[in-house]
Length: 253
Ligand code: NDP
Ligand code: 8X3
Image 1 (cartoon, rainbow, N blue to C red):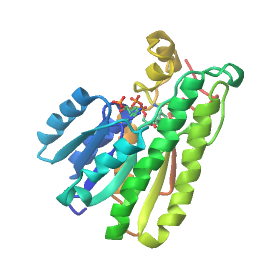
Image 2 (tube, protein in one colour):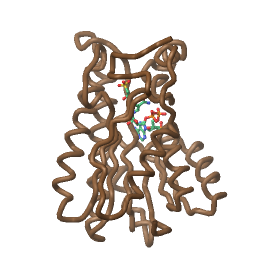
Image 3 (spheres, rainbow, N blue to C red):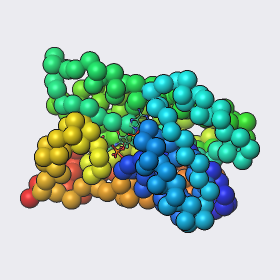
């Protein structure tokens, strides 16, 4: 692999994004890491610098197009030569049935998972097009392939990501930009704590009696995808714990 490629990873302050940043550094990428929690971004930046890789932390809320645009516009010199965009930032909030849904929860999910991903792609794709190369990795979910009780709006946002991955691949075709859709099942991160609004007991129950995927499992998959030769694109990867066959079919001991 050519060294000193630059990857930008959204939602690098936790879970899948954090592990992907660390593994991408190990694989020889210099990194732009993003998220809202500045203390975590700095801690991760310090850790990555110890590996000898360069890192640029950018703190912003992906839901605000002006913040996204300003962050990408602030890039100068080599940092504009982005090879890989990992659209990872995202969340589920709540498990209410549609008739009891909380509008603020819906807006947080739609604004982060769909609109944030779009704002990032709109800002970064032109930089890739200018170089006639690049790779966009979108974190969708098994929730983008199936629906399940209480998943309504989260599933809708991830179905949208799945559709956007297909659409982007067509739009990016003549620019030699790869698009990979990653659709994991259960991964134990802060995801369920966020979904259950800090209720750790409810979050722990999600993974009770089975071995879930780890953030590192997904990170390794992403690193594999972004280090294939130029003529190879992994379009769509569904990755599940062995103990999970579908959103609802889970083998719990
Ligand atoms: P975590 O909660 O551990 O991490 C989520 C990341 O998203 C954090 O770094 C958070 O950073 C960032 N983020 C959330 N909202 C915003 C925002 N408004 N602006 C900027 N960054 C934001 O969850 P995961 O690592 O599990 O989730 C990563 C992705 O993987 C998500 O898109 C999720 O939907 C998807 N996924 C997760 C699965 C799972 O079971 N865990 C399964 C399938 C898909 P900060 O709070 O600092 O802003
Ligand atoms: C996260 C996986 O099954 O909770 O996207 O929707 S699930």
